[in-house]
Length: 294
Image 1 (cartoon, rainbow, N blue to C red):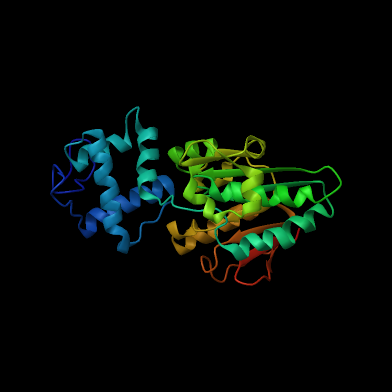
Image 2 (image 1 turned 135 degrees about the vertical axis):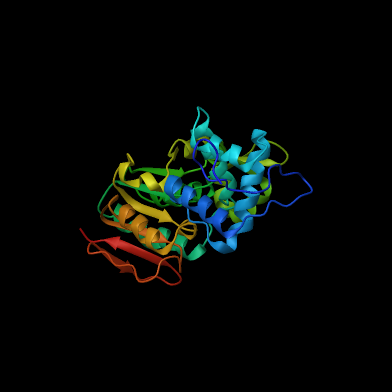
């Protein structure tokens, strides 16, 4: 069944309510996943169908839509299209993260990656891909800043965090977090980089925030990204949102933003058997990383 605009009727139920479940059959799920993949690149696996339904239902309610078809039309046309797409994607992606997540990768950054660049250069640029609310980005900034403080010569660094979620990026720019997040930050780094702003919150200090910038990026548009060449690309717990072929395409694209000698750090197990003519694997325990050779 199609409405006058030619769009397929995506759901049989017309008005969700708090006490009723919005079901989705195989055909409807396929329609939505094709739309999401075409517009955002996100891959919703069949086992995450209920997660997709919950996200759609929440945005329908927020928009006062009486049917899924009405919400579909809202997404595919009209002045609020871009804003609403951003909010829907925000509801379909997980933003829970923490400081210094995956210790072995962070340790590799400190012990090997930053020092080997600073031994030949006086600057270091890093990119946190899929930065969510900014904890990973600030973690990298703390590590790089600490490495530079140990050197006698003047050095410069910058860290860019990108994400598709505008609400997450707004929080990241503020750099304000619940105090319970301090448990993931060493006491030394707490003293250097964190300041109390309320009984329940702390903020990353201004000096470090000035070394960090956050910007929206949909990995579907990676080839058009206005990113400078960097020494480190840190991309963990993001590729899970894409199918196998798309993961390889994304990593291929990211590799083009590395300086010669730059390293891309991925989540262990997120990408198997990847090959690139200009990249070689970096050997370090419990990590997955590749170095650009030229």
